[in-house]
Length: 131
Length: 104
Image: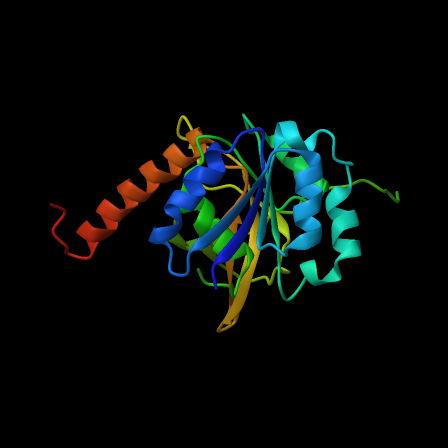
């Protein structure tokens, strides 16, 4: 089964790139783009994801502790099925990285996003999952 | 006198595998999964000065009396990735040469 990724971004560029990368992975990728808060929440309610990518602009309206709230509401998001929460920022620095880690994100990714590195990191974060 | 102040304690380890996205480190201490640690190593440097990089522990295994810990580098910038690639290329070439391989 392929890796399911939810991408909350103001445009679909990263979603399209990830979907285009799918044939190069063992089991494929399913990318679900969301550009509005409503769609993001609706997809979170309907589907279960392996990775959730949130762009900085789209993170702004979310509560500061939304990851903690989400994992409390859906305990299955924790072990053994781990979900990686990635924050996509225009620039990365140590202060921002520490802030997003404190908020429960797994990692911070700064453009240009290297899809090969991104997917290898996701594999590490999900440990036993293969894709 | 008694005191109450935070501090950072560093321990040494040896990077035994390296990639753009992370590394495997041999150390005498076990780290819990998901722990975020700071690594100081020439693998990520800023103008040849080692730059601290945050990393998340993603796997651990016992290796004799020591431990192997796999880490993923966090928040790597384009500059960090360039530094890692330069280090990998330099060390791949030097290790190939040391093993008697043909550097061509």
